[in-house]
Length: 254
Length: 204
Image 1 (tube, rainbow over the protein chains, first blue to last red):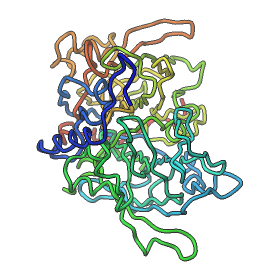
Image 2: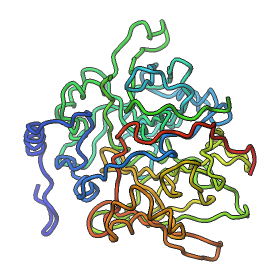
Image 3: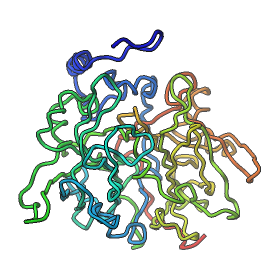
Image 4: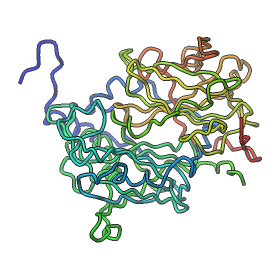
């Protein structure tokens, strides 16, 4: 199918896969994060800065982080299957793990937020034009606070893969978006958790923007039969390591 | 050191996951000294970015870094210092807050820390909002003083009085002419917190 005159030609998967392979030749970043300018993911073209980042010591403000508490998050927000009158369709799952810093210290009492597509691969968002059904019993957003060991736990349904328009026949592997805070604002992280064995990993420019294979593995949850609950839900474990061994933050209302 | 969990883009569909009611209301309307901080996020072609998410984190006007919860369910009294706002279809954002003061012993001039998330941004960006009236503190600021005039200007809020009272404009240019200065804050241990506990008063 030819695009109309003047419209940019949309690349094929084969072409994008070749770009992914070429980008993987470069040395990965030491910290494992993606380069912001990553050509196979087309939307980076106009949104990645051209100037190098300015290296700067964090300010006292940036060495502290917003504080969240019981008033901010209701316990039911951690169970995405109970936000409507009925049960959502799909495979019920438990996703749990720990949020720790680079020194292995738990990030305690901090906010963890998730959002995801439903089992059919459809987001509850006006911009999602994927012709898959919305589920009246699933919104797909959740929040919780970590406990004293840095643990979090969500009950949800396994999201479906979904198409997007980065290139022809582009599909995202199933994933859950995660938003995390540390004890310093500098540790802020937004990322995506994937499911083991997804056949779309090799084809997806967003997953492949993490070019170090070991770092890629850190984005994939592990199936954990000890988390699975009989006659109820399959369990996945995913630990999250935030940047840095930062200076100890100020005491909280000692 | 453990290996870090890599960043991934916030994507286009965060609207039902991250923004919350009152996300831009760091203080309620009518609060004495309240300012609006607003601006437009633009991409490398100068086009408005309608699907960016910005977070702001700051000390209070007393120079204390807040340690109080309550950003997600604001009680109208507690200054938590945290705002989260998405851009609208025109790429505009707006929040209402108080001007920060510098914490005791801080080498930096008063500022708001900012995080920028967007579809097409694989790893968030950090920047800062400074205020032009702190002339001496800005001159001594280790970041501002290391920048040339053109780049330094990208971090400076522009006074912008409007119908809702005193305001400041702070535009974010993700790429291209006038590109905002974005920061690598990963250098560790260069600034130490003050010895005393920083605590914000319970109420405004």
